[in-house]
Image 1: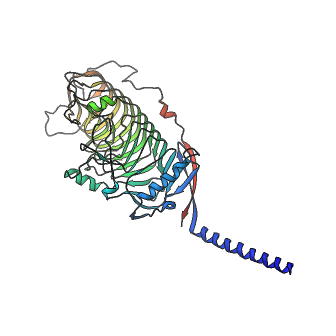
Image 2: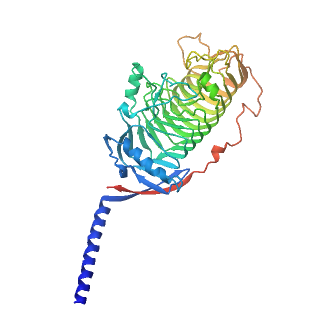
Length: 477
């Protein structure tokens, strides 16, 4: 009897194990392991998929709650090797969501994050303290689609997956003055340190695409940014009161400046007092028929210094390098170094103006006079150019120490032969080997081997290690 019971018990256990095995097989058939390798400043110990939190990639279902739940869950691993949120193939409609510390947002090549058209999912946030108001409108501003504040070690990357702000609604409402508040951006990270944005495609932002502000140690690498050239204020990458920033190997088609370096607006930027400094821009390709390849300002009241740009290509852009400021801005733009620009079809190659006079409000200080000095351009080739340079300083504050060397500009054939290739007022500096011959304010100088200064030292951001990382996640088949 005991032996019979033992045999029956063993048989029952075998049947039970078999049933569990079948269930496990069924689970494995429904859940497949997806693995990938990628380059990043930080590898993560924990990975989850957006589908684990109820994400639905049909392009119609809102995933705002899924993104919120995923980031909240993964935030518990910030002190345990960090975490990664995998966005699988699909169309993931969402409103604004925040990131967390020691966190990577990774997009599969066929992943498409879509900014919702439901404005209720773009809640209002406070204006930036260095601006005193929204950039478009006074009062509040809409949140950015992907954002975060007071974060450390944040990565947005992928296999060239796409983040689409679906900005046409915002552009139309802005142009018809139907928006009560300032448009949000596609990505905005505030008061953050150690940020990497790489290998993603950003399209149709409501306004600026990438806006690091009050942040440091930022790399934007291998990013494609696309917007209709008629869209308003769709700047590409705007470091704002930031330090130690590297922008490289990016392709930008924009309705505004491809890269705009800023540091606050009028009395608010002066009071906040956080400059943008130690910036590297290299291997940038830009198309922007109505704006600049690289703009400095016009919001530069906290100061801009030590900007280094090299190996820049632009096609059909309004200006190569543009410095924008005005009385009331205060602050400074100094120690700007540019070498190796190849420009095709431009209105201006070099443009500086002290008359860019939009103000945050009527309380700007007429005695806040900006200082512009130490501007160095060399090794520039441009063709089909309407005007070589429009350099307009301030009578109360000449733009000083402007150096232009080894520049060849092929002028477009103009109907009016009276138009001069250069127009210079209230500027001081020199030139060497520049065609066509610059204005008298930039007389020939024997620079010798210096040929307009370009720093030889390395900035710390260039020494940040990029690692090869591996990740794996169970995904629904």
